Length: 117
Image 1: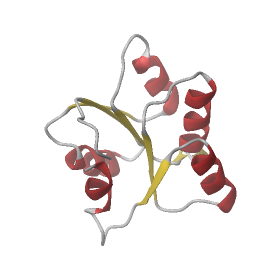
Image 2: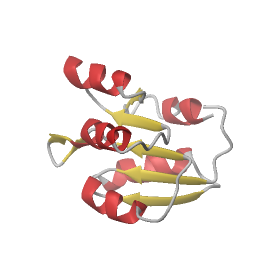
Image 3: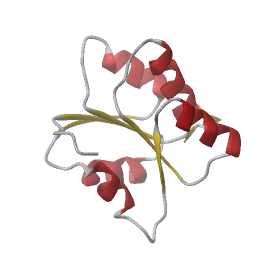
């Protein structure tokens, strides 16, 4: 992503992965939420330059669903789905909605940082 980032939102229900995502975008005005419903409430009246979403939040495809919801509302904020696994259907939905996918792994902690840069 070659945009100048000022404000980044991270949504992940696991604090360890929230922290990893936040460290990938350190130096920006960041905010983190542990659910998509909290994130949607937190977005009211605010704009973000990037949204980083876990896909499986509390066992659901919440990241892909939130991305699809944002697009259906006309929100074109860049979105990265940062998740350990995706079903082929979720992967297609994310691509169709213009999102990007970065696989979460403990071995490759720089993958998200590289995608953000």
